[in-house]
Amino acid sequence: MVSLSGGSKVYGILGDPVAHSLSPLMQNRAFLEYGIDATYVPFHVCSNDLPSAVVGIRALNVAGVNVTIPHKEAILPLLDHVDPTAQLIGAVNTVVNRDGVLFGYNTDASGFMRSVSQDLPFDAKNSHVVLLGAGGASRAAAVALASSGVTSITIANRHQGRAEKIISDLIDHFPQVLFSAIDYNHDRYLDSLPLADLIVNATSIGLHGEDLKFLPLERIKGSALIYDMIYSLSETPLIKKSRARKLFCADGLGMLAAQGEDAFTLWTDIALTNGFMLQILSER
Ligand code: NDP
Image 1 (cartoon, rainbow, N blue to C red):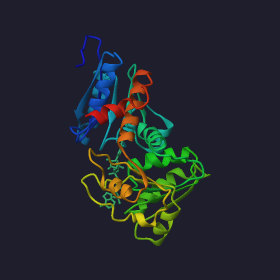
Image 2: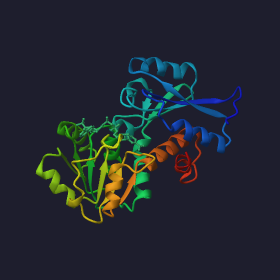
Image 3: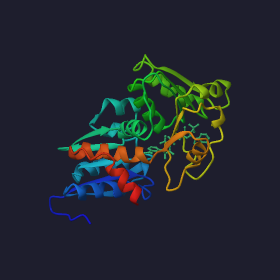
Image 4: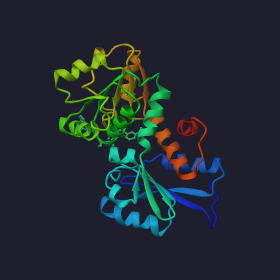
């Protein structure tokens, strides 16, 4: 149990919904284990109230927050400074309050990259990646992968225009990366699968046990790596199918843990021991 004092710092997470979030569990355990006089609380904030919530962060001197659905994009103009990577992604998931000045960061990107590199034998150099989905999580992954030196990124999405938009925002920043946008019904999508070294599910399909019907694993080479951003206590449908085909795969629990570790470090300047948050999540 966290013991609070008059000098305790308050951190939290802004989201709608927020009750399902595992961040309070992770961050409060980290504060406790590292002897930090702080607490982390869920703030259920609906979209209309986001500007007032940000005013509240300043007024109450909240030391930092995580930001989750649906506020990651909307919070950008409400902050004083946004880190260039977060700016490029167009989304902030971590805010640091430094003497009343609010700084925004995106630790989904760094967390994704760390998880993909640690939980899979992924070497970004010379690799071809297929990203499924074109929402905020896909954007963060695209920026992280492009910054890490992959050769090509194919973004496949139900609405191809969203994938095209990500590419038009990134292409000038990463001229060395070969980008393409495609929808799942196109032959070019099916042709990209056998070439892929890494396939990432960044759609919301699988959250409720649904099957990712448009990913035919029989077209994928045996050495391809599968990363499912969805995480669940049991195996996600994609992880189950990938294991059945003996493909190397990992779910999004490692990303959740790593983005939380990076947020903690931004707030406290303390680097957690490797795997600290993942251990907490695995024990729950
Ligand atoms: P968004 O809502 O921004 O994007 C959802 C994506 O899923 C879109 O590309 C959407 O396609 C696609 N999609 C949804 N339903 C369907 C469908 N029936 N058929 C085809 N495509 C579909 O979500 P986020 O980008 O924020 O998150 C995506 C996933 O990543 C979520 O499951 C989330 O839980 C997970 N995530 C995990 C994290 C972690 O730490 N492990 C961190 C962040 C996210 P379209 O554009 O065509 O509508």
